[in-house]
Length: 219
Image 1 (tube, rainbow, N blue to C red):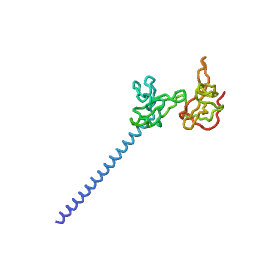
Image 2 (cartoon, rainbow, N blue to C red):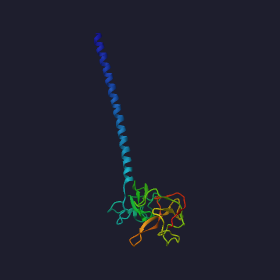
Image 3 (cartoon, helix red, strand yellow):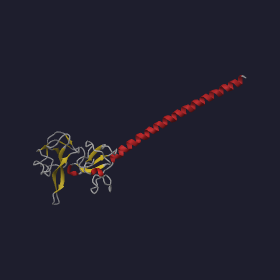
Image 4 (tube, helix red, strand yellow):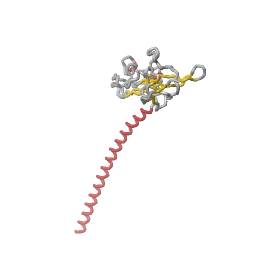
């Protein structure tokens, strides 16, 4: 009788230990599943952001405002989010698709406006500098001072003026903190097989930085 009770006691202990092991295993699997789900979500979001930031966008002249060759962009029409008078987050106009247009000095950059949620304004817009403008350029007010606009709009225009050093940059008299404008000294063809350095001016779009140090640009 005593032996039988001992056997039953041992069986009960084994059953309890077995149930505890099952419960522990189940809890561990649930935690792992949640962690896996969180990793998937984070990876998806991060991947989208990273891929988007690394994409080189293009402009297709035959399809103004479009980021896809062969596809028209209705937002480029007057009053649209991608129309020349808008093309910004601050414009507040609802978009239907992404917008790709030329921008910046000499219209050499490409502005990409992200229509993340069709029916709402752009999530962000960025004017990427062309490959021939290196990062990290700095300059201050142009000396002598002048305007970034064409000569027909400003008698003191610096556009096309001879300058002394390639990639020298400075900020013009029509520069504003909310809309930076300036010039960069670039190497151009002189028409006779040689080259010359001349000023190219317009909207800066953060292609170079204002360090407030007066910058002499004349040769």
